[in-house]
Each structure stands twice: as C-alpha cells, then as structure tokens.
Image (cartoon, rainbow, N blue to C red; front, side, top):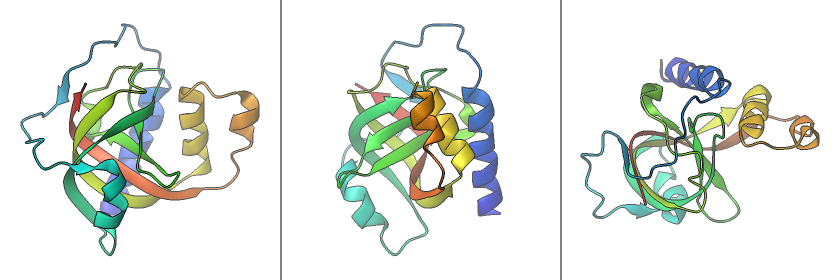
Amino acid sequence: MKKAFILFVFASAFTACSQTASEDNSEFGRYGDTTFSAEGALMASELPTALEGKDSLRTVIKGEVTAACQAKGCWMSMDVGQEEAMTVTFVNYGFFVPKNSAGHEAIISGVAFRDTTSVAMLQEYAKDAEKSEEEISAITQPKFELKFIADGVIMN
C-alpha cells in the first residue's frame, strides 16, 4: 500500500511538472499546512542519521533549497550534506513553492524516507531543472535516494 501511494505521488509529479505555469510563483511565505511548530526542527544534515534503521520518519526539517521545479515549483531539492540531496514533493500536489527558491532557507513538515527513483523520473526532474539534453541523456540508472513528502513549507 505504501509503495502504491508513493508511486501515485511521483506519477502525479511527472504530470504536474510537465505543464507550464501560468502565473509567476515568486512570493515567499507559507505553503500548505503550516500549523506545525518550527521549534526543534532538525537541520537537514541531521536527517540521514535520524532516519537510520527506520522505514520513514515524520519530522520537521530546516535547510537550504538547492533547486526547484522551473515549470511550476512542484518539487524542490534540499542539501542534506555529504554530497547528498533530498527531493521534496508536496502532499497531493495541493501547493507549490516559488520557482526561484534555490538559495533560500525552508522549514518543512512531513515524512522522510528512502526509495528508488526511476530513470524516467530522474530525467523529468532534470528537464524541470532546465538541464541540458546532454545531462538528461546521461541519466541511465535508477537512484536509491532520500525523499520527503511535505505537508507544509515555510520559505524564508
């Protein structure tokens, strides 16, 4: 059931991000359910250790956004240290973040887990991030990586 839900979320991301945004999504603030407390949030670099030995972890994370979907803002990446990035998507794609989020700090609430990202999805993320055709075609292997489904985001 969990894998079916995750598959549904990423299939929705593929569809949502391939559409062109009709409005400029450049305001920073609160997105989704932001009733969570940011007090005691884990630093993003602490997440891999906190997740060890667990299938998933409901938590609040604070870190720097390194990239965002340039089509709609329907996903973002956060640096979690040790040259690892975490892909963040949003519950039911009920909200998006600003396309110019890279370099800004975000506090996110939701569920962290590790899962395999297919080659097709990795290539779609690369397209959304406006990578070159050469970089996109170089993606030939799926990747087991850290992911996060956020139900709320506070963007600074």
